[in-house]
Length: 290
Image 1 (cartoon, rainbow, N blue to C red):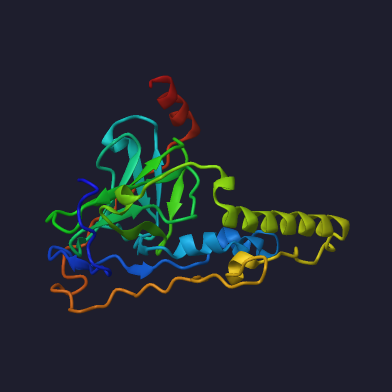
Image 2: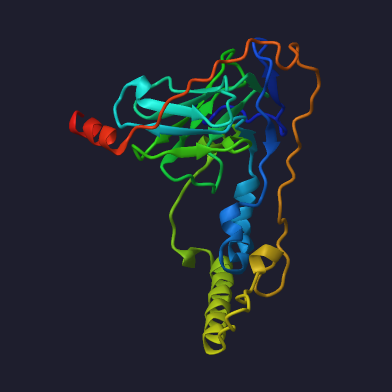
């Protein structure tokens, strides 16, 4: 891949082709701006961070369809990862397949993008989960006829990690193939750009004055913290509006163009595997024999 390649035209078709061997499918939805942990910050102040909220929306979420707990005993074997489905309805899509504490979802879709577009398959933005981390991949979905899996790496052995129904398991982000390689990064002194230097001096002076004012007159306990909000409004400190500004993303939902070939429930149900949780002594013995 070389930078000399021509960039594809604007706009990208993103199609999820259902795989005919499935009778149920995972939901795909535009990622929302809200995150539950942001609402729990003091007076929800994290929601004031527009870059955070825009990043939250920058893709489509694929949603989990089963309630389960997963636990890894720290060993490299495939069967070292235990998945217990809590509602008696095992999912066909989630399993341990690679070992080394990796949890895998097999998506019931083959994705296709417009020529020149890859698909960045990443973890849900700004949605951490204790004990496990999403593994990301970049797939050339404009030509490949195969599917890809979604994987998470368990980072804390002997801890039960729960996934709920409709938890996002990945985020789909189309990306033009040569866009990053076409960038021309450089480091320069700010003084080499007088106009930008002037704007920065105005901003930093305004910010310091604002911080001093708040420090001298702190809000009461039940009052929300004041803020300047220039970036959120899309204005410079001078009040001049930015030439272009987004305060939210409006991604189109996936349109159901055709009915599934198989009726829901037409395949033989999976028999639940009931596994008892290891005792504390069992866990100690496992550690001694590692």
